[in-house]
Structures are given as structure tokens and as C-alpha cells.
Image (cartoon, rainbow, N blue to C red):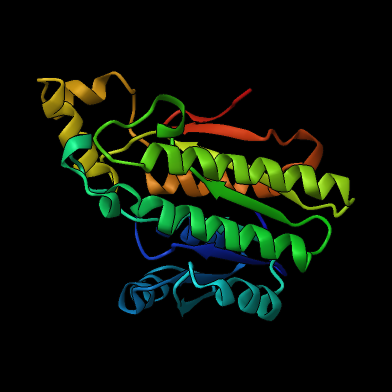
Length: 249
């Protein structure tokens, strides 16, 4: 069993889906978890439902002052960035610029502020930052506007930060994780429905091509695994499926 006692993990986007599963996994591994999201009620439910120490912090993770404030206050060993907007599922011509760019304004902005602050502070040597991107960054996502491009940019941000950390000998590790689409979250469920309809398939038929669906609990276990791994063994990015983590070139 994992033991992260005497360490603090900040999970940004902890109120639902994969983020909630990740927060629970770190709490169960003994870490003090700072669970960050806008939805105060959902965070309170998380803290009440899970074992271990979870401190809810209701905040807008895209606010440029939030990342620096919380990193200074809690001095985490690990930061897991999961928060993001749920894209509107419709073809390109039915988007407005506002709906198309929603994930750039939320997901990319959030990742930029938190990664930047981790480098500026900087976090203590040995710290880990995991940026949760998406499998859509690899193959595109034609029904979700700018979502795939935004998630690809998150992967680039993690890679750029890792390069800067090495150049400055900070001892911080930055890694991107690209979860495959799953019907087990509020984000993935409408996407599965939309893409199955686009392909003329049932949702079950569509999902058969992806193997066992990724669960929030499996996402949590994968992030704990990455935080506990030796820094020298970490890859710049991983695909995450129900079968586990797979290194990406």
C-alpha cells in the first residue's frame, strides 16, 4: 500500500470525475490533500465521504492569484492539475468562437498559471506536477471545438516546464497524463454519446474499441504511482486507459 504521509498534495479540479478519484486516492495513501474547485458543496461532500485528510478550498483555479497563494500556503510535494471546462458537443460550424475557445480559456489558462507558479516559487526539489491532458490531444476531437488543441497545449506546457526545471536544476518533475475517453465521468459521458451517434453506433459498440473504461479510482492510482516513482524513470507524457499508464514518445 502507498504511504504518502507527511506530504501534501494539491488536486485542482477535485470536485468531480477523475479529479475526485485522484483526491480520494492520495488521501487513502496518507497524504494531506488540498482539494481545489469552484463547487464548495461538492468539495464538502468529497471531504465527508472519503477517509484521510482532505481540506476543501473553493476557488477559481484560472485566477492568476490562486495558484501562487495556495502553493505558498501549503508547500505541496505534489500538484495534480485536472480542472477544465466541459466542451459543448457539436460540429465546427455550430460553434461560436466563445464555445470553441472555452477549453483554452479554462484548461490551458489553469495549467499555465499553476505550472508557471511552480517554477517561479519554485516548489521544493523532488516535487511532482502532473498535468491531466486528454487522449483527444493525440487524435483530435471534431465535435468539441478547440478541446483537442487545448489539451495538446497542456501537454506542451508540461514539456516546456520540465525543460526549464532541468535547465535551472530545480529538481521538480513535470509530467503530462492523457486519459482516454470514458463514460464514467460527467465530461466523458456526453462525448461518448455524441461520437457514438456520429458513427451510427450504440454507445456500447463505440466503447468496445477502447477496451475497459477508465475509472476515477484507476486514475487516482495512476497519479499516486507517478508521484511515488523515481524521477529518473518518469516519461514526459503517458496515455492512461483502463489498462494503466503507457509511455508516449
